[in-house]
Length: 502
Image (cartoon, rainbow, N blue to C red; front, side, top):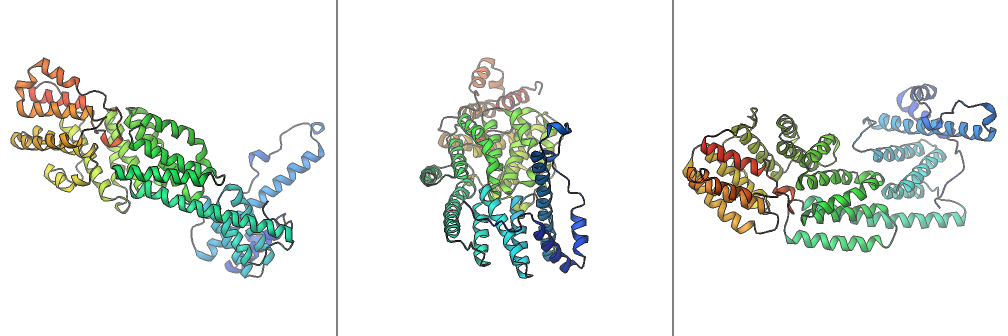
């Protein structure tokens, strides 16, 4: 049981003390401060009394509801006074959607310190105790530890021996919880962020070892947040192993638990949204992936790379769905993201998506090519570092674009030379389950490049090679998804060679 003090629990003395300190700093009177901040404080719907007959309402119930309404108004007034005090002292904006509840705890702890400095020791200690109770009930271990340490610093630890022992036990328990959570967050950040571009055996081994360690630590104490961390690593492991349906099932089971995430790890809920769109795109649910990606407001994402990921996925889903206007809008929004939030690989992926969008314009899919940025095939290929690209899908897609573009430009010798490079690359790096569609398309592209009319005029052979481009989503990752459907792209190349309709 957490330590609490019954003194001044009605909040009136705390409100007066906050208003007095604000008035001293701003030059206003305490009455004007309270009047300005309580002007639009209304009862929440849950506390509004219903219009029922007087005989049906017990006096004790009516008194309880009246007391609850009063305390609710006072609690919200205390929050606004803390916002005003911090804003008056620091000049910072009082609201910030990206920080969320973290800013609220910061404002109240800072206000408690300023109250203590201005001689309102009891009111400052009461405010800290409120923060401690709220942070503990919300599972905010970091702010619970800060509040408990601040109570010690203010020398407001309980006087009663039994209560003091309970307080110290709770403080040590929150310290252990916070240390375990901090370590788990570091491991989570390393696996999901620092090594997010790596898809080799070392990443798989690291995911497995981290999962085992977190499960072992979670068994020591009940922490629902740790369960969410474990679920996130399980989803990442399933995505790496190309088990997208199983990843979607895990995401569905954990979606309701994301509301309890501490404010400092709210980015993990956004990561789950991006992972869900990735899995949907990999299993071929383009319409659902596009709808979810467009419903997400990526402006408030706490991580810049997540903004890039959701923009890329939204663009590819729109292009694969044939929604070219939505794809154009998504790409243009993607290009407005601050360059400081985009790493080199995200910039290269952006170039690849734009290149395929313009390839769609060259094939007659739409009539709105994007002219911003480089459009020369040699400039694009020199800017993309193939050795750093994922060997499990992205690099072949880049080489496919290079061959296809030279073919459409009529540069047959260049297309044949690049086709030979693509053949060697695909033979070495596409030996895994899930690359059936890519291998089938590369085989057809080779026949078009080297044999052209002799191949496209033979309907039987065309049907044979087209039949190999099947199931683009068999144990795939979103990395393997070409921005344009491979069967549609193959048919367009055949039509372009024979002079038929596009």
